[in-house]
Image (cartoon, rainbow, N blue to C red):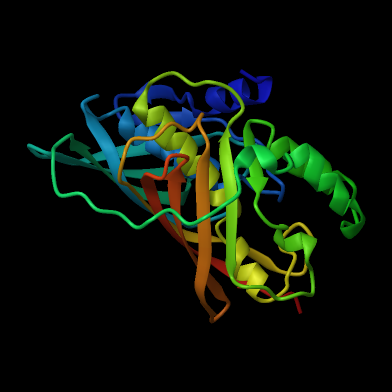
Length: 290
């Protein structure tokens, strides 16, 4: 296991300060605020720690309310909304400096048999044939006014091996493309068999690239090049089938709409053997600087 992955797992290992109150630490992201995927993953950890182990997360719906301060801890308060015979519902509010910065509702379910069908996995090259972040990102160093941006991008990807199928948005600035993006990802090291851990790590990664497809439609490079400003507004995930975050997952993303200073991304995450594991939808603020 890489040191970066160990650090990420430590970040997700929240401190319990009361029965349903937890505290998490933060760290800087590529932009000067707490990475949204970190807050979402920590909130899901908090919710999961109040749920029986035989109930697995099957969905989450979240709103990003304020930018998080990476220099301060985050307190997560869990409300036990419902404990039914099959389903358990939790609400989590993340607070910093006395103000809520994030709100999450999550639902958990006991395993049961049911009807089965799924959308077919799209075609994609094998992940082993694609360049790693360390191989790919330096090619675009000339696009950034500050060399430190490349270092921050590489640092953000040390714990997770994330490989673009095609060039990222900042690789084709000024060239509008089909609003679709694919990446393969897995953690840089093996994980324990705890299903909640794998779901939380997938939640963490899901916020890294989902709005890329919005940028591609307009030939924009994104937050790292400064030709747009933005932030996640809301995020929803449905966990359909078992998966491991330490094995390759294909993140197939597209943007059906952008309007009103907002862009919508939707995606499906497949295991390497073609099982549809997760569906994701996110809307974010995407504005062109004036």
